[in-house]
Image 1 (tube, rainbow over the protein chains, first blue to last red):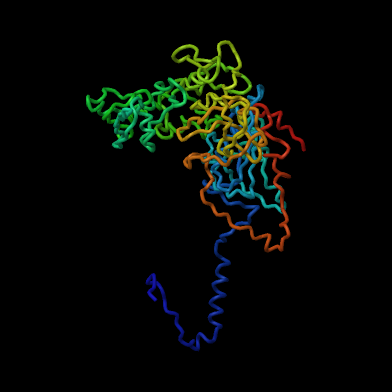
Image 2 (cartoon, one colour):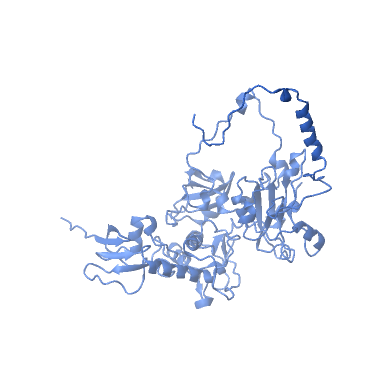
Length: 178
Length: 364
């Protein structure tokens, strides 16, 4: 058969020499490699105590953003749900009543907004689709749980803390993004 | 022997077609179909005297007729210019036309707000399609867009004057379909606006059709307002016996699950209503039992409404039942136990106008 590359090697099938048959030198060589690794720099970190810095393009759990005045940016335009290849996002819209102008940025807002984290593949297409800068993926892992019901994230779970009343929490949730 | 009607030969973008005398260039192009059809924002074939206002259908006439082959000095509005024998028209093959059309779109968008995320027309909006095809990504307009006082024109129709492009289609609908027109264009120039003179509700039997003829989101269905996005609803053709003799009773129902969210007329390939329906059919009959279902409405596959709907999909056969010897698989989680969206007890389609925060007070 014609080989696809010229890198193929014929396997040697000649009988072992006496030196090879003794095995002990080979074992010693292997042990020395193992022993040598004890003095090398560890590639792992002790995870919960120590955490690696995230890459700037890391895509974690979603955050629903607020504007500078603490109003929700989302207008329930449905583009994130349209872009979502896993169909993880659902929402129901409502009209802003007089007196709710300090809560919602636009005339229309998402009364219900849910992301099913079981379906989500963290591709970030919702973030790209959003015309209002309202949804983005944070630097947080989706936590593990035995219970499926905890993976339906409602609007209250996703909303970023209010920058006016909770500036510290807001800054922390915002992270280095944007 | 009746005299045979003489047909006019007209060439549009190097395609020759024979049409009857008195046909406009736009309608001749529509007979050819495809890319050579100029877009139209104000012309509506079912409304008399429409057209000539938006200037998006401008074309170049390279030769006036066989008798007088001189070109027309300026671009002409194809919806208002009749063909002549031997006329040569350039639409997409003319650089001048493309440039002029881009300019017209830029003018139309000067005062049009960028609120497509909120607008209920998004997804089936003529201006959206037009600006996608001809518009530029940025704007050169540095001033404030015009704003208007909000007018309430009744429980059925929502008016967003800022989105209006003054095509006059709704005025013509009121003139030609209803007995008495109650709205019109007030004031002039920059201040021109669609309104009723001294706040009045539009409640004529056929006035709901202004929603369908509106090429933008200036007139939208208040009973559908903010309920759902157009592309998440499923269009289904249906008809009913309407007591109104002028109503054709043929409509498109827009479903989400089992709920009828919206009823509209059926739109043809040019985005025009095939026939008019009355207000009762449009706003009052939002039950499947009111209608005789004909089947799913065919939507152009380039439309966002047909996103995710593929032709000729073969769904794999469910084998789980055979493997489990007929036992039903255990459901790990019923989504309605957890999710608050699309709750079985709350039908958005049954709420009169748009939903408000008061409609979402927790029951659990």
